[in-house]
Amino acid sequence: MRTPFVAGNWKMNKTIAETRELVAAMKTGLSGVGGVEKVICPPFMALAEASELLKDSEIGLGAQNLHWEEKGAFTGEVAPGMVKELCGYVILGHSERRAYFGETDEIVNRKLLAAQKFDLTPIVCVGETLEQYESNQTRDVVMRQTGLGLKGVSAEFASRIVVAYEPVWAIGTGKASNGKEANAVVKDFIRPAIAELYGEQTAQAIRVLYGGSVTGANAAEFFSEPDIDGALVGGASLKVEDFVQIVTHSKA
Ligand code: PGA
Image (tube, rainbow, N blue to C red; front, side, top):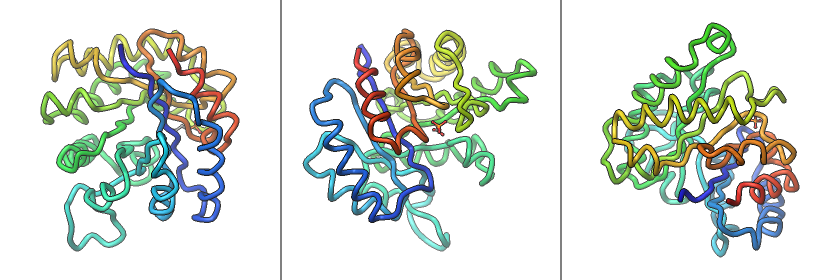
């Protein structure tokens, strides 16, 4: 049995003051919703504040990125040890980082190795663009991103990785995929790519999420699929009611 997992990716939204308000409302809204691993990922600037506020809470805290080096002359970057001081989780290889900041599968993999070294649970994002979807490349893209992104960690750490299948055409567009189609990608491409690296047992142990225009209204459709273990939520993670509804629906 895989424990359901829901993470909110706030992206570049919310100041420290706004974070204070939203975290307080999330704590209230999510109190008593057990049996789900729930995580919020505010921007770097607000992580210290959020970690203070979440001290006595079951809500986990994640960063949206990290640099793979431990320290040094990397202006503007944030080291994994700095993330670890505040967070237990980190999102890696989000499609916006791949598209706007040149992140390759090799870079995602270096970051994954850094997450392992600093004992951070990674949420690794994979997914095809609209062009790749329309030209039937989903299998190749998703298997390549999973295979190259996840390689080289210990078997023990591998089973802790969370993968998010996020078709790029569904992110922020209001056009979510559908449960059946997303489940098929997870079952036929993502878990087999993990099995190639770490064996069938690990492939079955890893939580795989769906992401892309998930809302309180459509979440249940995805969660009813056997290979989808939760969601990575963008826009709707900024709305308390929606996010609470999504977390509640994810319970097995
Ligand atoms: P969305 O974003 O829910 O706003 O589509 C999802 C994501 O980017 O992780």
